[in-house]
Image (cartoon, rainbow over all chains, first blue to last red; front, side, top):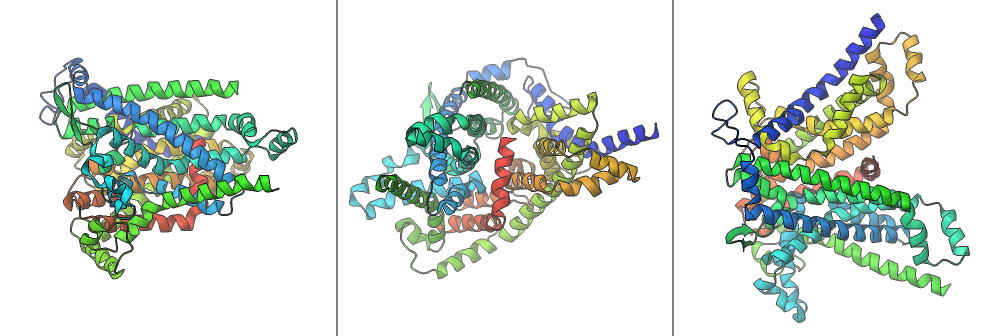
Length: 306
Length: 285
C-alpha cells in the first residue's frame, strides 16, 4: 500500500512541471483562442469587460476580405510548389551523394548547412542576392544586362517573388530532407542492387523497382514535413518580401506575396483586428489539420501498394 | 569499364556545380561584409578591395545600439541554454513517469501531448499574450518581456515532442534494470536520476539538437513574448531590427548576418555528427 502511494506521488511530481508549462502556453491559450474567435475581442474589449459574443461575424468578415482569400490561394500554391521542388531536389541530391563521389561527405555538409540558419536571416541574404547580386551579373556578361532593369527584378512582381520564396525555401530545406532520403537509401540492402544488376537491370530500372519502393516510408515523412513547414512559412516571408509588392484584387489594394501566417499576424497587429486575426488562425489550423491528415492517409496507402 | 565511369564523371560535375550554388550565398555574405557601402551596391560580386573593412564593419555592428550584439548573443545563449536544460530534464522524467505508470490517467496525458503536436503556433499566439498579461496582473509575476516568460513558453511548446521522443526510447529499456535497483532499496526518484537518466544520453543529444536549432533561430515567439525595443533581445530579433532601421545599408546588414551565423556554424562543425544524426532521428519519429 505504501509502495503504491509512493509511486503515484513520484508520477505526479515528475509530471507537474511539464503539465504546468503545457497548460499555461498551449491548453489555456488554445481554448481561449477558440472562444475569442467568436467574440469582439480586441485590446479595448478584454476578457474582464466589454467582451461580446458575435457568432460567425469574424469568419464572415475574413472570407469576404480579398486579402485573406488571396493569401489562402497563394499559400496553397506556394506549399504545392515547395513540396514538389524541395522533394525533387532533395531526392536528387541524396542520389548524388550516395553514389561514389569523391567529396560526398563535404557535399552532404554543404547542402545541409543552410538548414541550421534561421529563415529570417536566410531571407535577408536572398533579398540581397535578388536585388543586388543578380542584377550586377550584367557587368560580367553583357548578355545578362537586362537583369538590372527594375522590372526584371525577381522580387518586383508577385509571381516571380513567390517563385523566389520557393527558391529560398528549397535552399533552406532541401539539405535536411536530403538527409532523411540518404538514411532511407542507405537502408536498402546492397544485395538487392547486386541481384538486379546480374539480372541486367540498368540504373533507372533499379531506381524505380528498388530504391523508390524501399524509400516509400521516407516519402510519407518528408512530404509531411515539407507540407507543414511550407504552409506555416513566416520568417522567410517577413525578411525576403515582407509580403510585397502590393497589388489589387476585387478593387482592394492587397499584398502580393503575403502568406497566411503573415496575413494572420498583420490582421491582428497592423489592422488592429485581433478577433478577426484569431478567427483566421482557427481556419488556418483546421485547414492545415485536414490537408496533413489527407496527405498522411494517401501516403500510407501508397506505402502498402509499393 | 569506360562506360561505367562516364555517368559517375557527370555526377561529379553536377554535384560540384550544385555545391558551388549552395555555398555561394555564404560566400557573398563574407565578401560583402568586407566592403564599403559604395562597393556593396556597385560591385557586389567582386573580391573586396580591402579586407580591413571587415574589421571596421564588425566593430560597427558590435557597438551598434540597434543590434547590441554582445548583449543579444548573451540573451540568445541564456534563453537557449535554460530552455534546453529544463526541456531535457523535465521531459525525460515526464516520459519515464508515463512509460512506467500504466493506467488510464497516464495514457490520457500522453495522448494529449501527442495530439497537441498538430496545433500550429498561430492559433495560440494572440491569446497567449493576453493570458500572460492576466497572469501577471493576478500574481504579480512578470511573464511578457522577461526570461522566465520566454523559457516557460519554450518548455510548454517544446515538451510534447521531447516527451514523445523520450517515451519511445524509455520503452526499449528493460524493466529488470529498475527491479534490481528496487530490491537494493532504491527510491523511485533515485532510480530515475541515478540509473535511467544516464542511459538516456543518446536520445538527450537528439532532443537537445532539435530543440536547440529551433529555439536559437526562432523569430516569431521571441518577437511576441519579448516584444520590440526590449532590453532582452535574441539574435534574429536584433538582425531584423537592424535591417529595418538601416534599410539598404547592405555592408552593415550583411556583417550583422555574418556575425549571427558564425556561432551556429562553429557549433555545427564541432558537433556535426550528433546534429545530423539527431535531426534524422527526430524527423522519423
